[in-house]
Image (cartoon, rainbow, N blue to C red):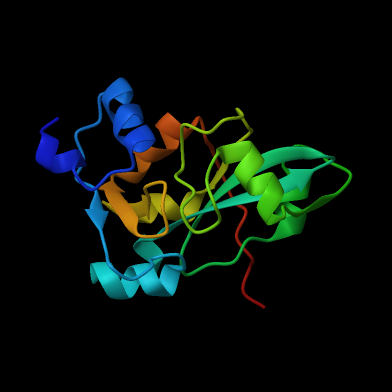
Amino acid sequence: MSSQDTSDAHPRFAEALRELGLDVPVRRFPDATRSAAQATEAIGCDVSEIVKSLIFEADGVPVLGLMDGSSRVDVERVRAEPGAESVERADADLVRETTGYAIGGVPPFRHRTRTRVPADRGLLDHAMVWAAACTPHAVFPLDPKTLIAHAGGTVVDVRERPA
């Protein structure tokens, strides 16, 4: 990996990329790319090509859900996938404790805590997706199969169904 590719990467993320053998550019922006809409505007891609890394708490255990930026997670489907009694969105403290990163900058892999990772099947509809690179100002592109594999994800259907 060239130093130019990682010059805009958070040091922990640059190290993770090296350890995983991933040669991907990290793009840093002066304005936040914390939300899917902000990332879409900065990158110039479709909102569905943004990967949202969302932390949930299933029966008290953190779960990382990977979802495209144009869809919403169906919490009931996340609950049913492992057979949990209850699932809710994690608060900012649990997100940071589990991943080591703040909301809006959570990458899809290399977290403090190993979690179960349901990855929505819709991510596979794209040749390339963009995910947070450890800060709310940096993103990186990767093909979704590789991203899900490095996240330790299981491809499932967790998006809300159209009404």
